[in-house]
Structure formats: structure tokens, C-alpha cells
Length: 199
Image (cartoon, rainbow, N blue to C red; front, top):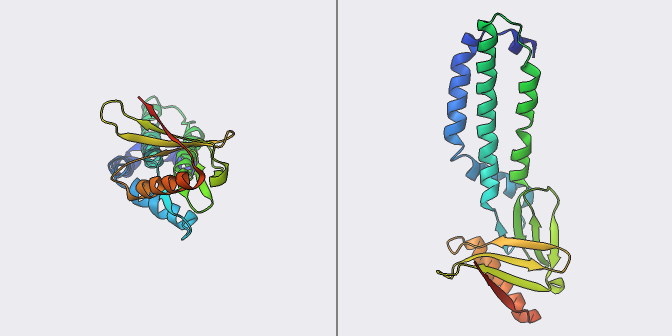
């Protein structure tokens, strides 16, 4: 911390410039393999019929990388301004705290997922790191969000009267297709009516 407070901004220029550029450029590519790898490492099970990674998981990880780049650039810029005014730099701790805050979007991205197994549907919503589960036999309502014009299905929403889980649907994603098949199979078993909500 003392080193960062005293180091000259010109010394930092090449390191921060390269780091910021790499972080911003890679923020569009790196989240996909990293999120998939870490989630598989933490949550993979052969019992899963489908494991869905919502787009928000990747977006949040990308935001975390861009956030670090912004904080580093802010550190460099404010340090240079202080040096030009010949003032003692006192924002090191502020920037350290801002860097630590990047842990939040990274954590939320890793702990945001849905999966389907023989027991039911499980979800870890974006704003929490605790898992919510609904057993197949407890499901009271299943609805689909459908486009008015194209009849494209966007989400399946499952509710047991207390908890609600909304699972994204993408016909090009085999995991969401597997989840849809599981829901349809269970709907035949438990005689649910899947209702369409047009939008």
C-alpha cells in the first residue's frame, strides 16, 4: 500500500495501460470459459438432467473485469492529478476498496445458475448465493413466456405457491432443450397444464 502511494505515475503508465486494455478486450471472451469451468468445478453432477448458465452470469463476470480496469485507470488518473498539483496522494485505500468490490460481480456470476434433476428444479438467482429448489411433486403452476408475433418461447416459470423459478429458454441451447423435455415429461406425469403468457 505504501509503495502504491509513493510510486511515480510515469512508472505505472505502461503497466496500467496494458492491464486496462487487456481487461477490457478480454472481458468479451474470457467470461465464457471461466464461468463454465468454475461452475463445472463447483456444481457438476452426473445427476443433472440439464445445467443452465443464464446470460447474466457471463455479463456479471464481464462487468467485474471492466470494473477493475476502470478502478485502475481512476487510480492512475487521480495519482497524476495529485502529482501535478504537488499534493500528497491519499486515495490509495479508496481504490483498494473499490478493487475488492469487484469480488461481488465475480461471485454473483459464478453462483447464478439453474439445473434440473430427478428431484425437481433448482435455481440460484442472480441477486443471491443461496439455492432455491422446487420438487416435481410440489409444483402448482407452470407458465411459458411467449412472443406475440413469432411464438418464440423466452422462459419457463415454475411455482409451488411459495417459490418461483424462471428458467430461460433458447432453442439453440441443448441444456435448455433438455430442461424443457424434463418439464414436459413431468407435466404428463403430474397432469399439469402449461399455460402460455403472451407478450
